[in-house]
Image (tube, rainbow, N blue to C red; front, top):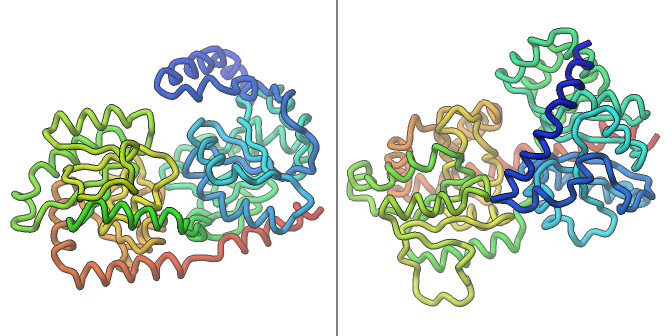
Length: 429
């Protein structure tokens, strides 16, 4: 009954969902591209497989899927890989990572209505499917089972908050998760919460993000960006979310009162969502800062050091560059109760991190990084600037944290191998 009501609700909101695409396309035109795919129309795409299907909703999940996708391509050379998304930025990230791989096809997943899901399953007939992290749609999960497609929730995480919300559905949640062929959890805590929901097949395989290797080209660009910035220390504020930038800019404007005689660093300000780049640039300018935009920088052509207070990271797919250019990185989404973002990518290039009080989406990784000496937690934006100044003023402490960051990232690798082994019976069947 709940599934029927859910599907009826989707029928009602589908026109609104299409209108929302048009609304979002005002700032991000990609939302009006490939609309037919969201309605289960794939007639212009090749359908000949056999297909292994990976669903990565947006940017973070697509990046996290990279080591798994590369491993799948290597282990199953006679298969093609179908990579689905829900956002244009996710699709763009996939194109940046895999655009030269002829065995990968990208498209959008259809909206979660039974007949649209059925169109998708009939068209591609994937041999197996892997949903990244948290992307659970009831009709998609049921549709895969009806089509005989073993479906796995991979790199799965379930925060305490999400567990409480899901548990409200009682048996309906257990029935939905029972349709999965398996749930491959990041941590023991995630596994326990899935099991408490009644999920029968849970394995702990670790976090694929630890297996993400920073692109050498990105690291080299970071070194070049650092030379362009000059001798100043560099503080990154990465993946910031709406509402956080005003707090960061206000605290940054009061650096001297918060940090004493420690020189103010250059701030790399990198909003998480590209549609907010112009908004954040204007916000920083109104706050009295000089701003350079990454999109306007020719890193090969600049001879003298930049004098701008802030470099706005208004590019996609260059996070490795930003982290490699930084002495210290604050990970956004954590000053406000938004759950935080991935800190592993910064640690992988040896950049220690600061996080705010709200990291429930990445709780285990954050606590492990703090315990390893790679991460410090701050209460608010003022504390962030004070602690950043303290670390930047102490070269020995900064070097120690950099070493701990690299060690932390290295010690937790291996999730790709464990995930591939857990998937093997279904992929080879």
